[in-house]
Image (cartoon, one colour):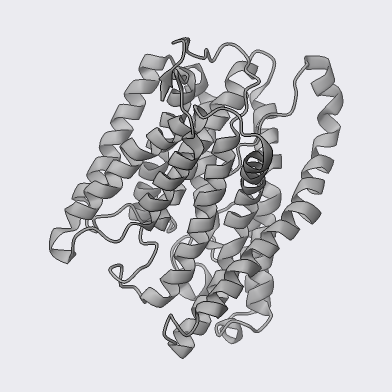
Length: 393
């Protein structure tokens, strides 16, 4: 690790730098989310038995990456870009795959593959599908079989709801905030994260997908610190050049998300302290390592870019597929060793679905939706922003 000239990157000036290592880290986090949900089917609600135990913290990492890359892509554009244009770009980037994830969830549910199919009428599924595509959250017990998920057809979409809230705060005023004011916001948000994780009732950062008082509290707490900390990190610049920063960051991220549960039920605060440490300290360090590792050339660079492209489609489409696997496990109660090949097949299926959606749907649809703005981009000199998909996303 060697020091580079300490010249911070100003958010008032455009930068053409790209961060391929961050693309790769986003992809690794998405893969671990899928693994977490697959193993969760066998844990049967017992967090002590869960393998890839802290995989849900990948969402908090996505929020951090999203804030960092959003500031990189947009902070210097506001002199020639309107708030409406900002929202148009974000909606074009995210909503096509939100819609696809909901459609996949509805199709699998109505196909008869789920044990819940007989109890749900197609018109009700269609209504919930339309609400999900429009990102309108459902109140508790208004969804499928009285569940509490914001988006019952695709549970992973809950994080997009809170990311849109963070976008709204950014566009409404945070984009103009001084570094000191932004730092104060980040510090207060860090206190909220620490309180939730260490002093909360569960000793963990899990939650945010239910549209009730507690769910909204957890969701806002989880998005506020990492998203705005990511913006602050980007504005502060990266004053280090780190050799092999990407593999180091990737290893740290994989270990952090796969770490077994810390402590037992008699000391929940221990696990909460670990999770607070990941969100507040380790994840920012990982982003700094990734952003400071320089460009990736050759096959490592190609792999990082591929993982980055695949990360958002994988995250937003995997949950309906994994839900079918979880339903099968719940009905059969097979031992995890006996189902290892089936679980691996489901994992590969999730990758295949995401890749097909990316190549045949997401990229062509976003290209088509962006066409009306080409003349305007030529007039203003704007170029398409770097992808902030993960979340970010």
